[in-house]
Length: 82
Image 1 (tube, rainbow, N blue to C red):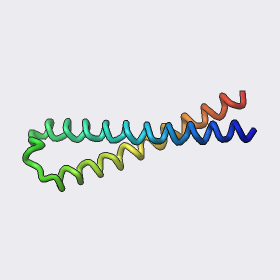
Image 2 (image 1 turned 90 degrees about the horizontal axis):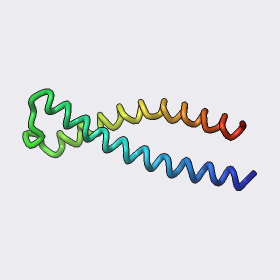
Image 3 (image 1 turned 90 degrees about the vertical axis):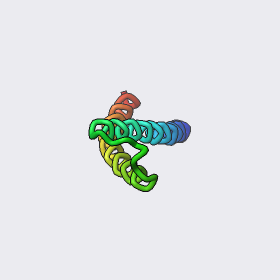
């Protein structure tokens, strides 16, 4: 049983790292697309302004991904039970 618990914990850590990486990539793409749609060149922003936009988008993406992770975790748990 402990071995299974350890495997699930390891899987969770790996999954969280991948999710964080994907969130950052998606946030970057999203910010660039929003700027493009608004007719703003990324070069016109300071690094601080761009980083602030990234922080806001990452926060938005994380909120969304938490819901996805909860649902995925529940399905994984049911699969393990079943």
